[in-house]
Amino acid sequence: MNEHPDGQPLLQIGGDGVATITLLRPQHLNRLHREDLLQLQAHFATLRASRSVRALVLTGSGRAFCAGFHLGELEQGAASAQHDPQLFEHTVDALEALPVPSVARLNGSVYGGATDLALACDFRIGVADMELRMPAARLGLHYYPSGLQRYVTRLGLGAAKRLFLLAEAIDAPTLRQIGYLDELVAAEALDTTVSRYVAALAANAPLAVSGMKRSLDEIARGQIDAAALRQRLDTCARSTDLREGLAAFAARRPPRFTGH
Image (tube, rainbow, N blue to C red; front, side, top):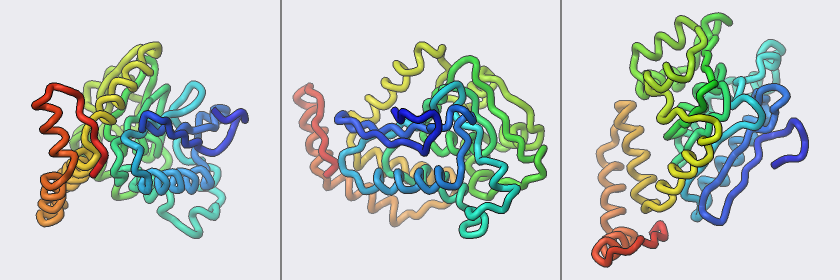
């Protein structure tokens, strides 16, 4: 962990194939500054290029997961708005597009744009005392298109309207009920539950996992490329991993996948 109380997101890659990105501004509830978004994009590029990473955990330090974008920079017309008005949107979209599956370890509450950052992960595991609030309507903001699409496709229109239009704080049991959280656990069980998810993801065939992750997201958005989906299917059908998976099943032993 970074020794400084506040810093840019930290990427750690373990020998078990699990990568962890930790948001490191606990004194400000891990709010995201322009430099943090650029650092996240750099981390995502590293993960896209890696052949060894099998799963990603995204989490925060301190008592909150993330408070969203630093509104002070928005008010001041920061460089992020001048050079890339869609910097936050592009960062979240890059997370969703990662070939490696991701788990949001929600160690605390989540606000604003961070609600979409977590939603861009494939799974979300939260703690009992967390809450979520999307205050765009209270601030006079119209949320960006891909975030709205993510809310509707992953949670449904009714839940999306509730979270965006009412702009109310939503407690953890309700987040589990509407499908925002895949699991809701006591704080002391958070790491064990996250480890169970990432172990299952890391144990599966990387080509099949990344291919189906992309195909499922495209189907959810109504953007099916039938030829590309068929190509991913054919790639897996010709893969060494499929032969290994079938051999391991026949021998009743754990498979040893290589991603080829």
